[in-house]
Image (cartoon, rainbow, N blue to C red):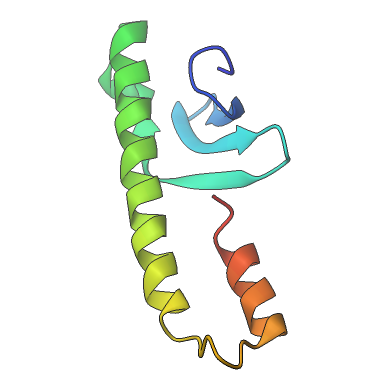
Length: 93
């Protein structure tokens, strides 16, 4: 994975259900994919890698949007340090 997608060292894969449910970074961060990639739907490696890429893009876009909405709730003049750290932990990407 790390040679194909920068910053990703692995995926979380359930062999029984054949679902790719998360991507993993070398820093130990785990990002749950939404939607998960169902490998039962595809047979070729190129096809499931394309589905994985699309799921990564959709997930990261959704997380970015949610993080910006949450960040907009902060008062930048009197930034609450603990709240800010919780915001950082909530959005691993």
